[in-house]
Amino acid sequence: MKTLTAIVIAILVTLSCSYSWAAQNGPEIPTGSLNETETADLVLMREEEKLARDAYITLYDLWGMKLFLNISSSEQKHMDAMLKMLNRYSIADPVASDETGSFSDSSLAALYQELIDRGDDSKLEALQVGAYVEEMDIRDLRSAIAYTDEAPLINSYSNLLAASRNHLRIFVSHIESLGVDYVAQILNQSDVDDIVSDYNVIPGENFTMNAGLNDAWYYPETDGQGFLITVYPDQATVFLAWFTFDTELPSEDSVVALGDLGQRWMTAQGSYNGGQAVLDIHFTVGGVFDSDDPKPENIPAGSILLQFEDCASGSVTYDIPSIDRAGVIPIIRVGTDNIPLCQELNAITQ
Image (cartoon, helix red, strand yellow):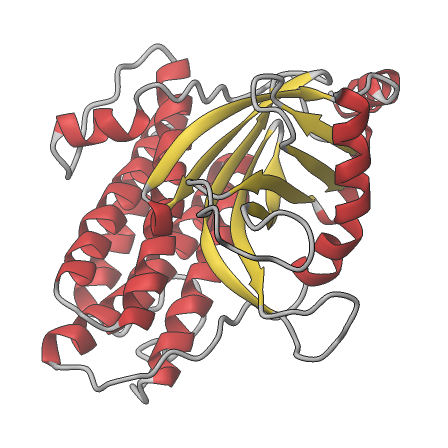
């Protein structure tokens, strides 16, 4: 079965890679008009994502902890997603300047300075600031979702929410690796515990992702499914193709011209830090076999926290809002040929 899985992944990866770097715009969904609350929430989320990005960039400059630089690139994508929504609804962008620490909302400007002052005290406090920001994002995104019925906004907010949950898991794992029990700062403790529980997110201080990980990966208990992972060290970026099935079997009378109706493939990409990477998931839809017409489109679908313990094993922590599913998949290589290369490259980075 290992050989079959490898063959399937190798055949499909050509399709996946060509689309993962394409524009990340989904099909147009009819747009209504926003009321005062919806407008205010969207404007807030645009600047709040900037606050997260700016805080992480500054904390990286203060402490040199690469996880801040890694997550700041994800926050930039979130800023871009909110700008897209502002443009869609013809709302003025509150970000008048992209300068770090510059905000139109005076309360966010004050909060940014407060967080930086706190994060300047120690590495632990810097990590606590990261967790605080993610709890704040989770709270505000949930509220924004609750007060709108606009599908484009709900979809965009939900994907940001999935990423914020993964970011919170990362910060909490780093805090607890220092021997400190994490105490919720904004959300209820039970809420935070539900988000981070059962997620064994290890900082991976002795391992750095490298091109030796480029391979087919799978979980032996889920036959016929797997991942193809490619690391681009020069860009500190990871690409992942996930080959799986729908959450339920299709009906017996369903008809499909090629393959199985229940087959699903997704792509994900993002930057990495050490042995961890935060990836944005996309579905590619609307294409036709061996044709460039119509043009396929990439739809944001959630978030993956990819982690490698060493050159032979890792885990995929996924959060996909559209199907209300989150979980962890342990992964191993289909073959072991590239392990020596991976170990050699890792030794160079340590």
